[in-house]
Length: 245
Image 1 (cartoon, rainbow, N blue to C red):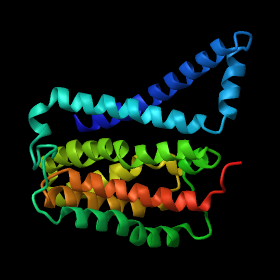
Image 2 (cartoon, rainbow, N blue to C red; image 1 turned 135 degrees about the vertical axis):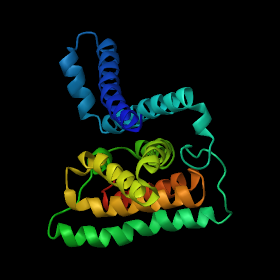
Image 3 (cartoon, rainbow, N blue to C red; image 1 turned 60 degrees about the horizontal axis):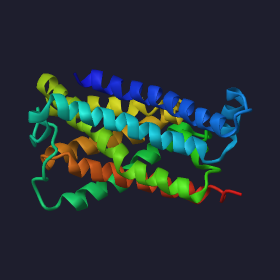
């Protein structure tokens, strides 16, 4: 079940991306009837906001599909705080916002030190860097909203909700937290250009998110921490990019 949902999420992103490109190219072609579809695709690719728009819509499609599937087929587990439930309930303790922000904002610094030691002289780049480099401010804001809200929600539902719960039943909480964090890190490798030395930061973050999920008996602390982590990463990224011309 858990691995199937993760695979479904990835497949929906691939299919959704292709559909978005096709629809945008068709609209461009209809707007300029004499323009071949290949030329329409090339024109879309040249627009600075197209890649960001494609990424936002694709994640919305994939996230919506996964959230619907989880709620449709496992409604009883949706609102159970502890595994095998998925944790869409109020957190158990009032300290959860502070703990979530601490994990989300400190994990990148600690894990980043290890990553930089392993990377040596290699630059650490992400696909989002190429996506946002020339995008207008409005599209960057849209990307930021998606990255700190919907993307953390669906990824936490998958990795700290469904996958962590499935693993705990088989191998216990500690190993389940580590394995779910490893899976979480692994699916981000393509977006990091397969730079393996970026894994320690993601692995540490994943373990911290699993701890939040279990300690507070709710998925929401890990969602907040994940969103804070993404917000910090985007703030650093945008600060290093030149303003679009």
